[in-house]
Length: 260
Picture 1 (tube, rainbow, N blue to C red):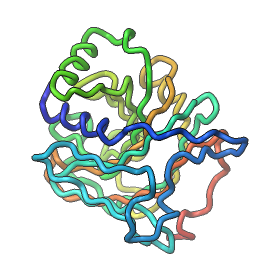
Picture 2: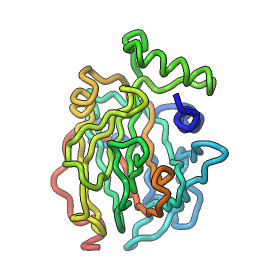
Picture 3: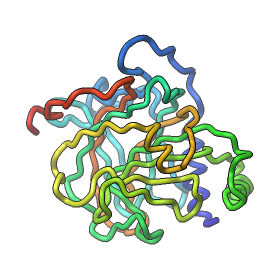
Picture 4: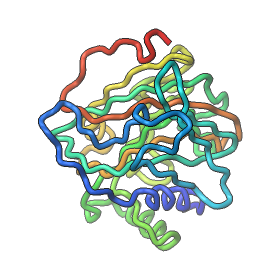
């Protein structure tokens, strides 16, 4: 397993020490993913979000809270860099199966192609990591997990689902990681048609997990965002709105910034 990949995943886990979960109530929304919109622009990140670095020799992506159309969002800027933000949760998808968010991309990464290891970059990613029974892992994945543990003294999440914005691959394409089958990417946006807009996403994470991994999901243990250009060496920006789990699919939303 390449040292770069092991270091990246080690950093991801290092930033994900579990917080005490909040008790779900009877509302539609599970208030566990710290909202960016509740923090003033320019302030430190909302409580619970943690920065993570891929490796000491990797340039980190720059994240900051900014005002965008009267709402605080996270701005990400990457230049030959890769790092992210993570938020620990404890979510049962049987109760809260839907993940809802908005993001915005000013322009695409011209040479990015997530089906190729050497070009696996995206201007925006939303990551969801799961618990599971490691005794069910395939032999190849056990080797990858063991190598990762030896190199980093960390444990890989049982499974990680990553929603991405791709350049060319069709929406709903599932892309397996070149490193382990326990990381799967789903293309939720593709091409330049929505560049500059704030598209809304409501994903049935339970159904997406079943499709990507062919099994029932365990509990969700953390959510993360990442903008990265360490493979292509290009510059990229992305903006992230609030991320939340909900019980039922919400109705069609009004524009995120009143037409912005």
